[in-house]
Image (tube, rainbow, N blue to C red; front, side, top):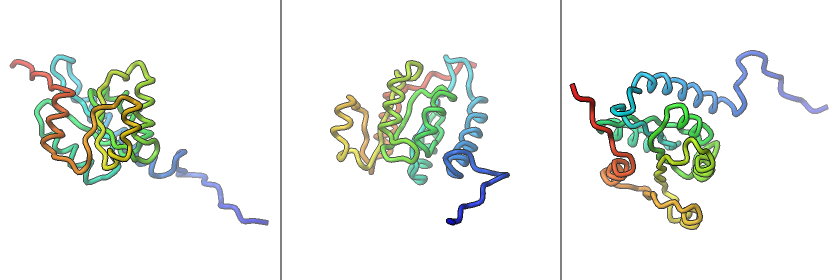
Length: 171
């Protein structure tokens, strides 16, 4: 008879494997950190979710956005976790790559458009495959696309145009 792998009894990874479990732990940490930043809507920081699995690019985007006054960014490297994160942190803008584990950027976008509670949130695609997927962008009427490699100042200007920061509270 063929050999089968023994069943895991303790410490079993949730469905989706250890990478998904790691992503869920990271997302939980982010939720707790962001909860402390949320103030009244008139002056809270704008929250951006970055759906990007390329760690150097994700960290560059996150750190650059976090250096801007009035913005707080969080990275989610798995497409399947992006939508859940957007809902949990009440994101003001989503920066999204096309090719990610879990769900592709297009699958994430389609689900966002179908969800009445988040469909009006702006989405900015940043992808090395922008030219390759022009027809996909056109069919979905997606116009906010920045191809990789990108100019960081141009990307930050686009973020500010799509999601202007609120004024800080008067002291």
